[in-house]
Image (cartoon, rainbow, N blue to C red; front, side, top):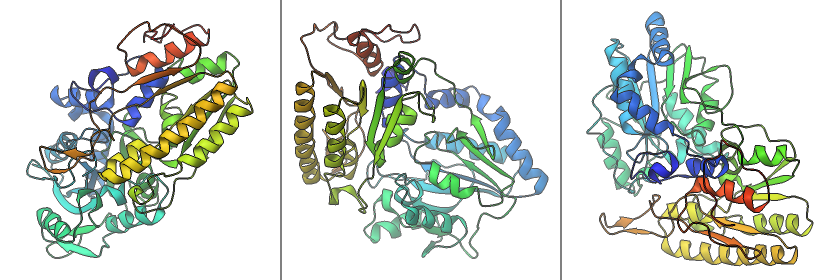
Length: 441
């Protein structure tokens, strides 16, 4: 968490920055920090991509629709960034300055959304991230968000605050707030030639909705950071290319590698682990195990861990690959549900799966490094709020070595130490780009 993964001091880590640092082997400054700094120095307000989008709306006399996760969690977005964007639009005298609010309750307490700090723009819709930020190809969820943006929803409210109260009365928490239009008379929809600005800085949960927006006949579709490669998108903060990530070093050494995960974490062991590069390295195979199709994962705490393990053990036994990068999604995804009984069940499954993996490695003279990219499931209740704890934590994570005897070279490390440690254990040269230290030797 925090500065160890390129985030502000005290900021909880997340899967994106965690996998990025494991694969990069160096500290990588994060978009959250850069955008925070740009807002503080006013540089944000002269960003050419954002300015061009505003000028396009002015020229067409069209609306600007800002869409983003209204959250102080700092994992996918930050409410300060959205406020700055809406302020910038107001400064250019755009009267149709609309905000479509996505509510959190996952990286923040379940019932904590508060719009009192929103000082610019007009909220015209509210929707929980369960619908608007799906990443598991649940098209029916994304479609509800699309319908809302087109001005169609089951629920309406006079104010955003009223929409939240109504949702709580229905038994919904912030993450699951049903699509709600905010209207006193006529709903406001995204129309052809309007401008849309997507304000999440983390890509994985913004992709599905953004792809759907490509069919809206917009005059400009801006993403705060790079979600995926498409010439129809305008990116305010283009991605910096990382050279010599772990995957690239293994590939350049002529070694084979497998990336394995279920749907929920597939992007993390591929795109994020490779430094934000979608294309696989040479001799890099990828295997996606579908995540279960359930409404929430507390209903199936084992998720697809057994199928992931079957594939992993098979690859180990067949000695198909020199290196396997695998992710078990359960401790994070079940941790987010706040369901303590489901968490216990999921960890029992993971323990059994890890035993199978380690048994297979022992029989094939293999080595394992077991770690986590952030904390979550170790805290399931928040004593301060009296609510289930659904967010990540800033706790330290373990790094467990299983293999031939080694010496511990450092008692405390960071995620960017994993790649150089792994290369050292394999007898491979560590590139100068990797500034992490060796933990075992």
